[in-house]
Length: 95
Image (cartoon, rainbow, N blue to C red; front, top):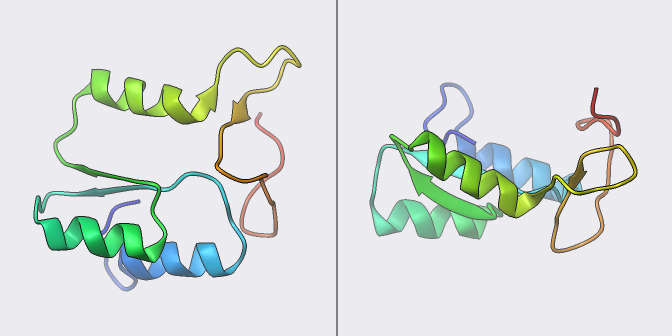
């Protein structure tokens, strides 16, 4: 989630997603390495906070913390602190 988006910033978008019951991991990204940005993003409901630019290797490492690439059901799963809830905002399938 980019924190510095036009119209609706990432803080507000994250809060809305969490209030709607979305439990998938949200990784906050920003060019601002201020501790206040980190605090605000985590308070809004972000799972992780990282500054840009982010190296490809770091993105891969970060994603493997939340994506279960060894799900033997044939579907890619998502690790979450609580059971996943899907609603009209998210999709239940990974095509």
